[in-house]
Image: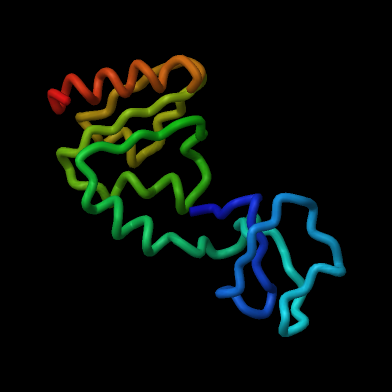
Length: 131
């Protein structure tokens, strides 16, 4: 939703995206001559994939939130679009339950580093859905 640092996009044509695993320089231009820039959302910019993310989250049975403060909007509000009975797994060393998360009765917090707690969250998810 916030983009990828391994890609670049043309400033003139949002549909022109290339793989770019290095720093972008002023010499990096698309065939139409527009400057390339990292394919990420900077603070203050519109989130390109917000509508698509909202559409997808409305279909979720479970959501896993990993390593975010849940304080930067609009991304932090996405859980509000999930069905009311959606299981939400929040993994973070210092979890911060925002307003949208506070309304959820199926919120499970895994306090710790993602490298450890993701395994625990997956096991919990498997047990819930008997996978």
